[in-house]
Length: 271
Image (cartoon, helix red, strand yellow):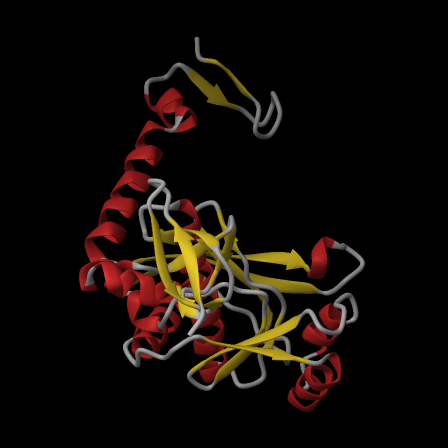
């Protein structure tokens, strides 16, 4: 069988059979490394660790210590949250769910005028953790535009159909984990079991595609971690940041105050 050369970040080069995956490469180095691989950079493009490598390539295995590893983790978590929402709210329609600098969000339309509040978030978190434990593989599938449109027409999801209008045939992919399928470029985690800790942070309103002429959707922000202790430390840091907030400290130390007579939200020196 034909072989290809894989170049690693330290400059070392190894030969593998054509079609090897990044996960295969990780396994060839050590089982411990493979357990921690979340995705891979192949010639600087972030991809699923399960995608075949067909030509000589530069390969960087991505773990939680890499920002692109975290982004993959959080984008996959957005898909997990969408799966949980579909299970809990059968009429939900999905917009977009990207990773952001610290976590992820998903814009959703719950249907029938339903609204979410902070009090609803714990049950969504619990559902996410229940689904994560199923260790569902994230499966990538290339689909034609016709196939993609037919899928979301049958599902009755207008937001995905609108997104499809901007995509070219031959460049459309679906990702499926468990019973949930989404329109997505990826990449994603090897499976949901990597997600061990979940915290949904807040709920806000967001116009569809950022246009105030469009419908107001519900945006759910969250963050996830591979270990519960990482989430605990993150929440503790957020709490410490709140305590150091200059607006809070300023008032508590009587350095400045707020007054309706001066103007809402305008601080002035305390005297």
